[in-house]
Structures are given as structure tokens and as C-alpha cells.
Amino acid sequence: MAQYNFKKIVVVPSFKDFTDIVLSKTQRKTPTVVHRHYQISRIRHFYMRKVKYTQQNFHDKLSQIIADFPKLEDIHPFYADLINVLYDRDHYKLALGQINTARHLIDNVAKDYVRLLKYGDSLYRCKCLKKAALGRMVTIMKRQNQSLQYLEQVRQHLSRLPSIDPNTRTILICGFPNVGKSSFINKITRADVDVQPYAFTTKSLFVGHTDYKYLRWQVVDTPGILDHPLEDRNTIEMQAITALAHLRAAVLFVMDISEQCGHGIDDQLKLFNSIRPLFTNKPLVVAANKVDVIRLEEIEQDKRAMIEQLEKEGVPVISMSTLTEEGVMTVKEESCERLLAHRVDMKMKSKKMNNILNRIHVAMPKPRDHLERSPFIPSAAPVKTMEVDGVVNKKKTERDIELEMGDDYSLDLKKKYDLPEEEKYDVIPEIWQGHNIADFIDPNIMKKLADLEKEEQMRIASGMYNIDSEEDEEMKEIKTLASEIRKKIKIRHVEARLDAGTRRGPRLTRPSRKRERSVSRLREEMTDLGVDMSGIGDSNLSRSRSKSVVPVKKMRMGADGVVRSSSKVPRDQSGARDLKMQLALRKMTRNAQRNYGRTGRKGEGDRTIISKKPKHLFSGKRKIGKTDRR
Image 1 (cartoon, one colour):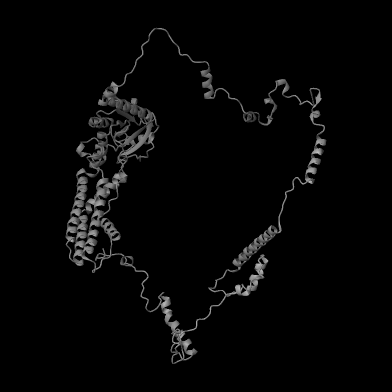
Image 2: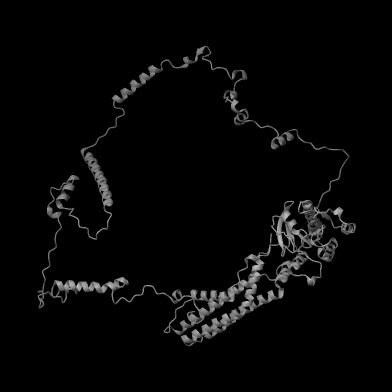
């Protein structure tokens, strides 16, 4: 399909948006903190990085704009002339050239100021050089504001252009305005072109697609053309002229023989002859439209003679009506056939065809005698063909028979028996070969069964199926102990589940629980588990206390009778005469701490600021003024 897709061109921002995007990205992606006490090499590197990063952003975005827009020298001449008609080739190339110049100027500014920053001797001078570099870059972009706006308008218009492939099979519809070109493309394709009863409804090129002989065809609807000199034609007409000049297509010239378009047949033929040089080396078909109003045979004799003159020149004139769809498909087929033949002729005349023909030998058989040899078709071949086509009836299934017979159907299982037809439905006999069928049952079956049961009873009585188990007393005790352990584990699981259900409230740090362990309880549990506790005294089960160390030196006492090595008196008790004064001091302390608790501070010495809010988060919309924070 189309080789050119102008919808992928990047959006071209205005000067203000361009600078805001680049400078904001520089602020976000580069370090923003520098102090005076830093080494001068670190300060230089800090500001050099900002200048280089800004220059690289400008360079990348401008390079993308230049690369995305099509170059007139590299694209098909049809699109090059179409851009010239719609946007003015000189203005278009000048705008892209100015963008390219701005990119080089920004690169040179960055290079110069990076060289100057290498010799900055203070923080202030480095900062001034950085501001000057960014300011000159922004000034360069400010001068390109008109070029950016123009390129954005071109991008929007290019994205709305139809995707036309100049090299594929194409039918090009042309003619005077309001002769039925858009109605024809709506009939043969799925395009939805606006149709109105006045001239110049179609103001640009429209594309539809149709199928013919399993091939995809491109149908292009052009705006109407008036019969006047080329330099007097407007932009709408020049689009049609550009398509006629550059697209290798079958040209369909539509005429209105009813003259309801406001132009006579003679005017339409004058237009045909004036633009006929554009039809050179292209298949040409003339469609006489609106035969539902007047037939081609009913028009005036002199006008009829003009049309017959076209037919004598080898141009086919086909009658059609887009209202009743009479002749529409005939016009389409004639155009497609002529274009296919023309493309084959062009390929045959090319230089590549000679190389291909030299490698191909087409054998033309000659008759060796005059005998007539008719084709031999095996007898089974027609039958096989009929089976494939479904003419010969296939074998019916029981389901097919059931559907045919309906309520009269009954399932017959005996028709598939491997027996003669006269014996399939016979009743199964009770006598066979002189014997009753029941005689073939063993008459001693019950006696044999009784003998078998008696033998089995004797085996059970003799202990044949008994398993010898020799368990001593120790093994029995182990099994008993294991069963008790399992039982106790289950009980603890149940108790833990009950405790978890009742303990829903807040848990104390040190829950007050009664004493659950004791020497007597341990002795009792171990005895239950089978451990002999008779020879073990209480001294082995109780916790021994460590003996206190006798101090070597005598403890020193203060004047107030307090040992000097003991801890200091708490601050809320120091200097308090009695308990009443201590309570008053505690109340004053709580009141003083209340304000600190509200602000989340630990005390009056807590100077921590939890969240440092940078200026750009709470300063609001930045007005015209200082931009030092960049």
C-alpha cells in the first residue's frame, strides 16, 4: 500500500512550549545544588553539565523535526509538487533551513560557553556564564517562532492528506465540477465523499479502494477543473493537475451530457483537449454520465458528432448513470482492463524483459499426423467427481434414517447380524442340537459350592490366616505412652484455639499470669509419662540462687545517709519537699510537653523539619520575572 505515512511526524511545539520543555527537563535531570565552599573544579563541572545537557536537548528535538518532515528531493515527484501547491516549496524549504541553522547556532553557543566555563574563577562568574548560555539559546529559538508555527500547520495538514501510493494500480477521475465524479467513486469503492448539487464540493484529493480480478485498485477522486490557463488555476484545481501529471494511472474523464453542471458538452470537450497533453502514455476512458436524464442518442446532432470524433480517435466513450448505476461497472471494468494491458506493454518494453525472455523457451507443439485423438477419461472418474460434488448419495446413518422417518422410526438392532436374511429375525431357540439350553448349566454347582465353603471354614479354624504377634510388655508400654502423647497434643491444640478466640482485645506487655510451673507438677507429669522420679531430689529440680559477693571495701555514705554508688535521685523528686510538691511538678511537666506533642516534636531541642518543601512546589504559577532557580 502507501509508501508515505505523514501521520508519524512529531508535533512541532511553539517557541514558549519548546523552551519550557527543554529548560524544565534540564532542571529535573541535572543536579540543582551547588555551594560556595565547593572546589572550583566541581562548580565548573556543575554548570558545564547544565549547558551541555540543555544544548543536547535542543539538538535532539530540532534534529527529530528536520528528519521527520519529508525532503522534497527524496520523495516521489507527485508528493513534491503537491507540497509545492499546498504549502509553497520555497517557504517550506526556508523554514526547515532556518531550523537547521538554529540547531548549529545552539551547538556553537554551547561550545563557546563551555570553553569559557573552563576558566571560571568563582561561583558567581560560572553562574553568570550559565545564564548567558541558556539565555542565548532561548533567544535563538525565539527568532524561529514563526518557522515553528508554520511547520506545525504543515504537519497538521500533511497528516490529513490521503495515503496515495504513486506506483500501484490507480484509476484517476477528473472532469468539470459537479459532473458526478464523487458519486462514481462512492459507487465502486467504500469511500464516503461528500456529494452536493453545487460546484467544488470536493476541495482536495480523496482515495478509495476496490477489487478487480483479485487485485487491489486505488481510485483517486480529484477536484473539478475549469477551462482556463494554467497560471490562473487556484490551489484546488492544481491538486488535480498534479495528480494527472505524476500518477501512472488510467484516466477516467467524466462528462455531463445533460449539461446540468452548468457547462455545455462543447465546453467540456474544450477542457478535455486543453488537458490532453497530461493524458500522454496513460489509458484513457470517457464516461458520459447522467444518461438517466438524456440518452447519448438523444442529444443534438452537432454535439453527437463531437463525441463520435473522440471514438474515431480511439478513445472509448461509455454511457453510465451514477443514479441508477447503469453502466457503472462497465466503466470500471473497461478502465481496469486498459490499465492492465498498458502495464503489461510497459513491462514488455523495458530492458529487463529482454534478459528474462532470453532465459525462457516456449515450446509450440506441431501435429505429427491428422488423426483425431479424443481424451481418455476413466469410467470411475465421473463417479468420483459426482461423489465430491455431493451428487451421489452417501451411506445413510441411523440418525439420517431417524430424521427421514420421524415418528415412524424404530431402532432395529438385528439388521446388522452376520446371519442369512431369513434367519436374522428368528426367535432364539430353547432346544439346540437335541438338548435344552438350560441343560448346559452344571447340575453339581450347589454341591461344589458347599464343599468349597466347608474347606474355607476348616482353614480359618486351623489359624491359617492368623498373624503371629509377639509383643512384649515393653512394646505395649511404648504404644500406650505414644497414645497418651498424641492425646495430650490434641488437647493443647484445642486449648490454643480457644485462647486465640477469647484474646481479641489489646495485649499487655507483661500479662499477669498465675504461676503455671512447679516442682510437684513437673514430678507428677514426668511420672505419668513413665519416668522414674523416685531417686531424684528436689534440689536437682529447683533453681539455685547465686551467692552474693561480699564487698571488699566498706560502702561510703554521704552526709544525707545515701550511698554514693547508688543511682541519682529522679529529676521530678530532686528538690521537692514532699509528695504534694512532686505531683505538682509532674503536672507542670505534662503541660509544658503538650505543645511539643501537638507538633510531633520530642522536646524544645527538637529542630527537625520532616518535609523540606522546594520552592517550585508551593510558589504557584511563575510570572514574568526572575528565573534564578534554573
